[in-house]
Structure formats: structure tokens, C-alpha cells
Amino acid sequence: MYTKIIFLIRIIIALILIQTLRFKFTAHPDSIYIFSKVGLEPFGRIGIGILELISAFLILIPKTIWAGALLTFGIIFGAVLMHLTILGIEINNDNGLLFYMALIVLFLSGIVLWNEKNNIPIIGKLIKF
Image 1 (cartoon, rainbow, N blue to C red):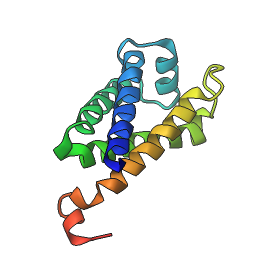
Image 2 (cartoon, helix red, strand yellow):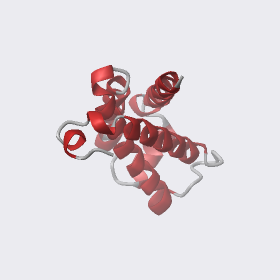
Image 3 (cartoon, rainbow, N blue to C red):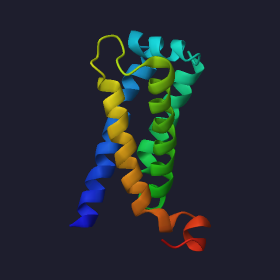
Image 4 (cartoon, one colour):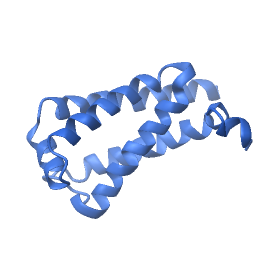
């Protein structure tokens, strides 16, 4: 049962990451606005989109779940920090949807990362929780 829940969480994370890529890769005005405001347009938008695509695939492959979860956690942690410091919670009257989705993905990737902590090379073998 627990394994199925973690698998479902991994799928949810991958779907959310992949779903947001169309905004980054098609240069949606909201995406351009966000990355311009933090000074990362256009290279940051495309680069982060590529990293999100990689992490979505990594989190679905059994041997690389830990890498996908770690990469996702890092990217989304940065996104949450940008919302809290530069962007604000609400972007272009979205009622905070992007921020709350980021929080959900951050929380879910944290769960997956914690579940995979013993599979992380070197660290997982040295430190047993």
C-alpha cells in the first residue's frame, strides 16, 4: 500500500512538472513576466524548463527516483523563495495558484526524497536514518 502511494506521488509530481513546461517552452506571457522579474529571462526560463523535464523523467525511473526528487526539491525550493522574496504569492491575478502548486510539489518531492534517502549514493550508505 505504502509503495503504491509513493508511486502515485511520483506520478503527480511528474505530471505537474511536465504540465508547466508548455508555458516555459512556448514563451507564455506569464512565464516571460515571472522570469523577467527575477532577471532570468530567457535563459533561466528555458534552462529551468529543461531541468524540470529531466527531473520529471528521473523521478519516474526506479534507480533515479532519489535524483529526480532531489532535483525537483531544489528547483521548486528556489521557486518558492522567489515567490516569497521577489514575485509575491499572486502573479497576474492567479490567486496564488502557481505559488500553491509549487508548495504542493515541494512537499510531495520532500516526501519522496525522504522515502529514498537510503538510496542516495554515499550519503545513503553513510548515514542511516
